[in-house]
Structure formats: C-alpha cells, structure tokens
Image 1: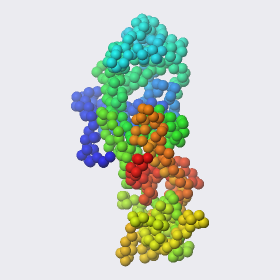
Image 2 (image 1 turned 180 degrees about the horizontal axis):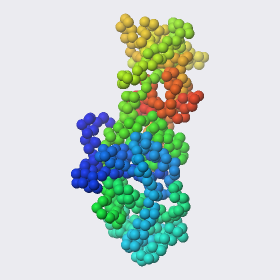
Image 3 (image 1 turned 180 degrees about the vertical axis):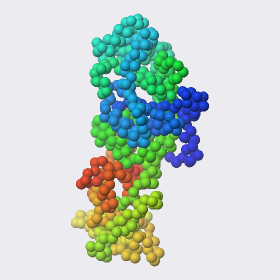
Length: 565
C-alpha cells in the first residue's frame, strides 16, 4: 500500500464524523458540547480494531475540547471477567488516553434500566413473552416477510408488571420468559420487531454478584447509558447502523427536553492476514494455538505492545487509514510500516548475531580488546555514540558467508574482503570444518589501516557486515515472529475453518544469540534496532539470567516472497 501524501492526510483528518460535529457546533446543538464514549464489552482483550475506535472517540473529543467516558458494557455475566476490565483500562492508558473520573459500567444503571422497563410496561410499550428464543426468532419473519405477533403481546399492564417483578425475583427458569418491547412486527427493520429487552440469566455478575437474575440486552442498555451520561456523539461501527432506529426509539421514550445523544456509524477495521473476531481470538487462546492473549502474534493491543509496537505507531496508523462509511480491507503492511517508521526515529541501534559463525582474526594481537565508536541512532543527532568491544575472535551471521558463492553474493567468501561495521576491513583466508563437513570457524586477517571502516588507499568493498565480540557479549534468546496466517482473509472462507490457514512458521525461537554488551541493562519492552536485522524489544519473559528479545518487525516488508506458500 502506498503511503499517503500530506495533502491526502489532510483530507482524511477532516472525516465525515468531524464534519457532522462541526455543523452541530455551528448550530449550537447540545450547548456546544462534544462528549463521546468508548464502550467495550469486558469479554476478551482489546485488539487493533478497538484501537482505531479508541483513537477516534478520544481523539475526536480532544480535538473539539470535549471529553470521553470509558463505559464497560457488562450486561452478559456469563462471558465477562474482571481480568478483561483491567486489561482494557491498561490498553487505553497505554495508547495515551485518559478518561479521568469518568469510568462507568452498564451495571451502574441496572436499577435505572429496570425502572425504565417498568415505565415502558406501564405505557403498554413492553410485555412479558413466555415463548422460547427459537420460536421468537421464527415469529420475527425475514427481511422480505413481516413477522407475526406473539400470543402474549396483549397481556394486560398489570399482568406484565407482575410477571416482570417475578422474573426479577428469580421465580422462573432461564429461557422461560423474556421482556420484549412492543413496537412493530411488520417493520422493514428486523430490529424493530418487538426486540427483547431482558432475559433471565442465573449467573453471578462480576460486580453485582447475585443481586440480579435478569439482565438487559445491549441494545436496551447502551443508548440509555449514553443519555444518562450526557453523551453527545455515540460513535460505533457500521454493523450498528440498522440498530439506530431502535436506539432512537428508546431515547424517544426516555428523554425529557431537547438534549439527545446521536449515534454515528463508521466502518470497522479489517486487516489482511488477521482475524479480528474476539470469539475466534478466544478460540486461538483456549485451544493453545497461541500463548495467551498477549502472544506477540495476536492482533490484540497487549500482543502488539509485547511485540514492541509503540502507542505512537498505532495512533499514526489509525490516522493514516482514516474513517469511512464503507467497509474495506487494509493491508497489514501499513501497520508494520507505521511501527518501522516510528522506531526508526527512536530505537537504539545495536549489533546482534542471531545465527553465529565464529571468525578468528589471525593477525590481531592476542588478548587485545579495542573500544570502537558506534552511532546510537543516525536519525537522531542527539542520540550520541557508544563503545563497542572488538577482539581477536568475533561472531558474524552464518548467512553472511558462503564457501562457493553465486555471482551476486557480495558478502564474505574465501579470498574476499568485506567491511566490519565500525571496525576494519576483513579478508577470509581459511575455512575450518568439523568431521561432518560443517563449517565451524573462519580464519581471517584484518587491515589495521582501515580502522573505522575506511580505507586510506581508497579501495572499495561491496559489503558491510555486523558482528559481535566472541569474548565480550550478552547471550540472549531471540523469538522471530511472523504473521499468524498465510491467507489474506483467513476467516473469509465460508466452507473452511480459519485455523486451516495458520502459519506453521509464525514463531521461530533462537536460543544462543549474541548481542553487544550495551543491552545488558535493558528492561522489558525496551526497543532496539539490531543493525541489518530488524527491530526487536525485550520480552517480559526476560530474567536476570536470560534476556529474551521479540522481533517487532524486519527492516523492510519481506512478506511478498511468502505469499505463494
């Protein structure tokens, strides 16, 4: 995907939601307030799609001097856990946003919602239905055929009030009764055909315990929460567009005065080579295809954080993709580009050898160690320099040597001279092998006149190799992560399980890697660019005895060569 020009970025920033808000501000609607909310359901960890929504809700409010609430939609206790609540708060804060004291839960409004349901019953706009879910679904008809009314639709107000109170009291079993709104079974909008407001669920709630055995449906709870909190713009994804008439109907029954929240829908984020369904992500976790919600291969915010993505890179990505009214597919390469672009400016450079091959410099003084100057970040003039130890024995990447190279291989080979980064010119003189014929070491000579990697006689070499001293280094484990799926749309095949497209090479663990001593004091989540290899960060699995690094991204997109797998 090509990068947007500044002119195009300016167009993206003036998206249709901002246009709506600016028109309403001109009209003086809602007293000139902009008040949004981010309403996650605490039934899993947030993913990159939620990050887009977080950036949109908080970012839009900030732009117009407004505020944003964090409200947890905890209306289904069978799927919700406190663990998810805490992870969501951590993710939102990590992205750089703050809701202040405005932390709410739908469960905060359970008493209010019950009272509102009673109000609807008294107005003869809600009734208790004894039919099971399957029967109710069949009665709703189809988008082209109207539904037909429940035989319990004309119960008296008094009977409905009595039954609803007994539902709350726990007298009935799950599935035995529901409370439905009385709207229009012939409406062209299926969501207006007497939707369910309450169902019986005898499951303890993570906040209210056993106080309730009936719970409101999301459609009934979220609009009213918006109203009671003073939300002006209820921004949600496109699948809720058909729910908007129901959202408005509930507000019409509840509101007093001129104020009302407005629901606005935008297209959700769809990424190539990625699954965005929380149900499917939970399946990957539960069935041990990945190592938890924060596995660096997961598109969860916690997984991206652990992999080394920065909040700035995700916010920049959200700005780049913009906000539209039409569903589309974004190339995951743009997300990867965003983190490379950000880390290129700020990541500390170090040298590391992941697949080591020993080099013995035969003409280098025995026991001598030099401290060579290395640039910390050429993109940041203020980053300074560091010292890198150089000795008689070093490690280079095994892939940087070939005994019988093809014509276009410009790295080290017998009789060939290369440059060692920040150090000297090096020439390979002898290849050492074991009994099986495997190369175990190279014997080379260096040119002491080329210190710093420059030749005084002006001769040129075609390759510069990174290296690490064999006697002065930090040994580490390095985990090379790649895309979790091989197919661009792994959940886009109706006749196939998305797990069939899992990439068997999405994780490679390298146990004995050598890094320059600079990293020895690195802390979890510190980011580095391993020169010539990519961006890496320190995994929380690291200990005082063993550093563990995750590859955040290669230096450039090299995925195209794998697409044919």
